[in-house]
Image (cartoon, rainbow, N blue to C red; front, side, top):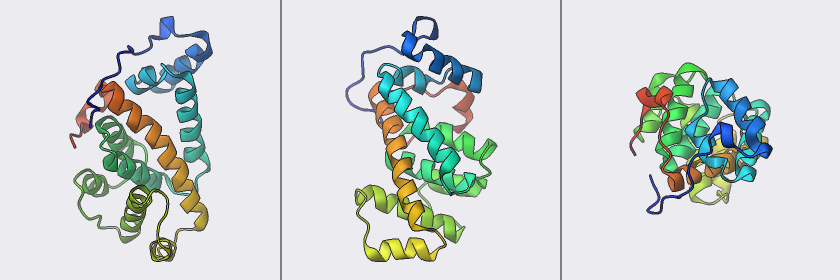
Length: 189
């Protein structure tokens, strides 16, 4: 999904980045071997880039979801928000890093049922949290808890939703081009 309006600000180039974010962008380039287009566009608002990277790292390191469950969460949010950039990037991360079974990723990408019942409940609850703006019914929470998740994880999902909202919405506005490294995982919603 792309916003009708496209931001006129160009992606921030590492060599001309303001000092306050030059180190952050350099670190990300060193982490990935390239500077992701999404970070270069988010850098137009340094507070956004910093908040995104900090929240993403906190969710990845401190959330009690497994790496595969974390990826299901990010893929589900990105799909619901229609973010083609994040769907491509997280599909590759799911495949290459997080151990998400390919059929689960494809189910999310295609809005099809997930064969794994616990991951289906996770997916459904994330959709509920998004669509109900964080106000699920008692029955919806109880279903999530009955699948083996916790109340702490309900709160952790809010962190993931906040982080992905930053990236999804900025990608919509910037019409962020998918980096070549993610090209095999391109998604058109």
